[in-house]
Length: 292
Image (cartoon, rainbow, N blue to C red):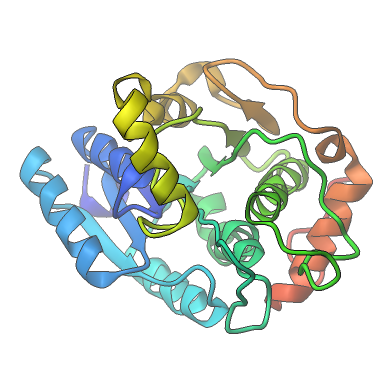
């Protein structure tokens, strides 16, 4: 197989945690691996460690803050220039903020990173993914029974609460998954959302509320909490398994479907968020036409 035809995977948030564990596993599989990271130095260190562990030199580093649409567009152009095909896209990057922050575009930052970053990056890479079919798009989700407040996605009317804002933004991944799966029907590209389970995470950074939480957990129950490598198995199954050939529009847990929050099953809500998202990231209306 030539380098141009080598199966290619792109993982966001790949410098640590779950994303790094996924990049390592795919490198061991012999795939061409794209690592999209926010920090150049940390990303380079992670890449070097994966190369040393696997001997796979076909590992490529791309740098972008997924809260910045300008940086996403620049990184997407670099990815398209370097990769002739994208067989698997894993939208893994996610974060939470203890207080309300905004992106360079003025959007509440957890929404900007966790939902809109994945939405824009996928949209920019979608034609390359389609010509690589059969291909898979996996959005890494969470499991919180919540609903998006379409009248206050930006948290300007309500009192900001970190985990509610995080949960709302991650619910966007499910809305996006279900709507994109319908729009890509018949293209050979499947779209699913995977909940990797609860695992030791640096969500929000080591100095954030989640970092403090996990430090306390490690002292008491660290032996019992799955590692990122263990959590990665669910996502790897969704990316690799022939049992999921042609399976699309699913919310997956440990090799089985999960019940999504009620709002995510509302097709009108899926379409409403899609329309809002296109406007917020500057993609043309119906950049991926609705299914019939």
